[in-house]
Length: 172
Picture (cartoon, helix red, strand yellow):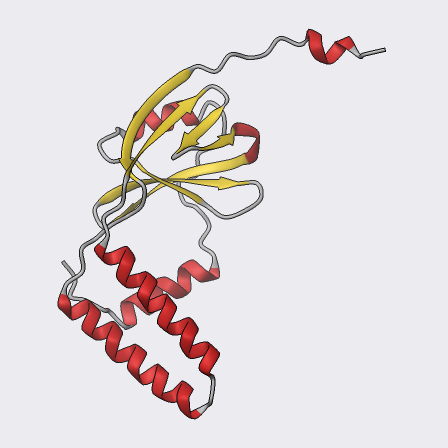
């Protein structure tokens, strides 16, 4: 016999509360100075790794530099984001409210970011583009808590310290 309790539950209809489009990732055109600085650092690192006979590590460093070059020269595609009563859809990925624990806003390179922290996994970062932060905050805060000052991990602190100590380009 089939259990009808599951079938008798009404399916909740998805309603789009807000939709907008933005670039899929942060993008900043880099100048010659940036690539020159990276090239000098990588050249010195490769020389050290050659003497240490770490050829596999050299290949990994070169591939990371290639990734940095591609991400700095190829503009991102436009994607659509939707906030619904069941969760957030961003670039074809759907995140249910039950999977998200909190959210906050950040600013980087003059662009507003919506940062979602899932219960398991890494942060989800969505560019707001021209969308108003107060409207987004009001909608999402109905489902998950807003954090004014998010906790900084050791990776966040280390990357901030490193970018201040070794700037790869002049501050704009």
